[in-house]
Length: 296
Ligand code: FE
Ligand code: FE
Ligand code: ZN
Image (cartoon, rainbow, N blue to C red; front, side, top):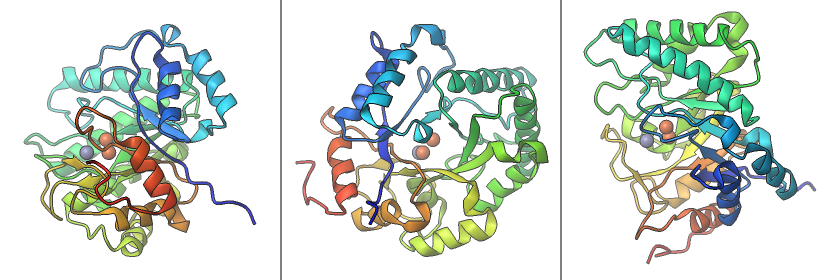
């Protein structure tokens, strides 16, 4: 029988002097077989030229180490607000940034770019959703290579965030032109859906609803995070695996669910005592065995 391969990793950094090579090394040090990274600081849009990021060296190590490159994920900076049509200057800047980010992702040979749908900041939500559709169609039209897909992330509903229900995400997807449909998908975040009000513990129920509203064929990435807050809190504060309201057992179900088998799963849990938790979290989730008090 073929051994079950689980694509599990975490967010890793992209810092000098080793840049992408360092990202790959960091992922391997956690026992990960995939990972997610930002092409620069997550909170700003300054980006170093890709030629300086040791991509070739990183990709060589990826090949040697048996990481499946097609499961690697890029995350766009979270300051992007592709819904903010009321500020044409920012809206245009976001447009241009996302086009460059698609190109950068391709330079890494990454095929999935996670993007937060943005926030309505006082505007009509339906108009914002339309603005997202228009922006993404434009970005796809300006990046003829179809290698990189955008995964819209399901959000917690903090402030005026958009994309907090599967229906809202589906409305965005429906606005994407038919010729770009293969380039649009979804990133499901366990902390976010819990905070948005879904019963995250009913894993089969969540996946069934996702399938009937959006379609599981659109699911490109799952973010595996525990939550510091109860269902429906609209907070978006991630917690270490087993230390929040979701708990190990439920999160492990997402990891091992047959319907999610080929999908990369990425941890975005917080550091504790200034240490990354990912090695322990990955090993526990992979083995489906919780080590009580592992953070002590
Ligand atoms: Fe995110
Ligand atoms: Fe996330
Ligand atoms: Zn979050």
